[in-house]
Image (cartoon, rainbow, N blue to C red; front, side, top):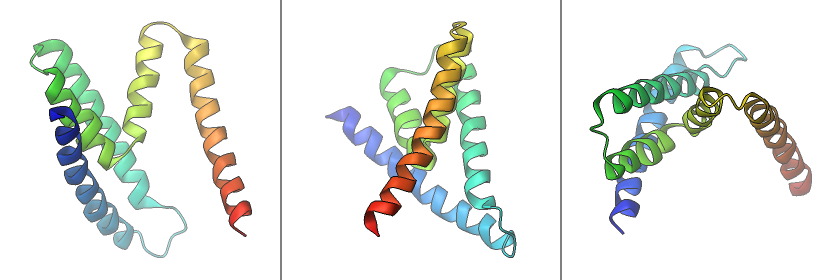
Length: 123
């Protein structure tokens, strides 16, 4: 139950940060077709995930509950692309190149197709 609460608290903070930062960046980039807010949030989330991964590996101070709070909760609420990035890098670090390539291509392709199907089904 504690992990659920940690994930929920972290998710709330991450989602609120995403809303605020993404909206602010979108207003700055208004007038362009490129979704700058989402792009910036995704890149910042991935950068943060990489920094936390390195810190965790070096220090050993990232306990399982803290991992739930930061990775699942905060970064998960901020952007799920960070989880995608972490998992892909972990596959590459284990030299599971084909699995990583399939994961990246499969995830992006399946996500786009699922959105397309959802839109078509709703019409």
